[in-house]
Image (cartoon, rainbow, N blue to C red; front, side, top):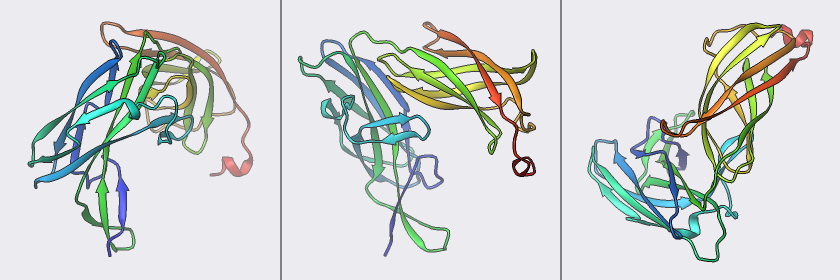
Length: 263
C-alpha cells in the first residue's frame, strides 16, 4: 500500500507550476478580482483541483497554514474552475473574485490558493520503500478593503552561531502586509565586517518576523565576540512607488564557551 506524502513545489517530483506566487489586490466597493496561472510541467496530461486555506508567516518558522482567523479571506473568496484538466506544457487560468459584506470593516484579508494533482505520483523514501507523492503548490492572495499601508521597522538583531548567520527582527505595525527587500552593512569599531542584501520576504500585517541575512560572501569566519553596528535599509513597493526605511541597531555577541569555540 502506498502512503501519502506532501511535498512543496520546489521538489523534483512537482508536476505543477503557479504564477504569480504573490497576488495583491485592492477592493473596490467591496469587491476584488484577479487571476492565477496553473501550468502542467510534466510530460502527461493531468487533472488538478484548486482550494484555499488561511495562512500566516510566524516569527521564527515562516509560512504556516493556520485555522480560520479574523484576517481569513477564505469565506469571501470564489474561484473558477475548481477542477481543471491541463495538457502537458500548457497553462490554464483560474479566475477569483472576493466579495465582502457591507458590514465588514476595513482591513486586509489573506489566503493561500493551492493547486494539486488529483492523481499521485510514485517515488521512494529514505528506506527504499515506494511512496505515493502528492505535490501541491500555492499562491498567496492579499485583498485590502480600505486604504491601508504597511509600517515595517527593524527592532533588533541577533547572531546564530550554528549557521554563522545574522538575523534581523522586523515588526510590521501597519494594517497591510509587505514584501520586503533591502541591503545591510555590519560594522565593528567603524570597520566594515560584512555586507549583504535582503532577499524578498513576506511580513504580514500586525506581526513580526526574524529575517535571516544572507552574506555577500558565503564562506566567512565566525563573528568574534564584541559590539557591532548593523545598519541598512528596508525597501518595498513597485518601481514607481518605491519606499524605504533606514535602520541602525546594535548587536552584542557574547564570549563563547571553549566547547562552542572548538566546534
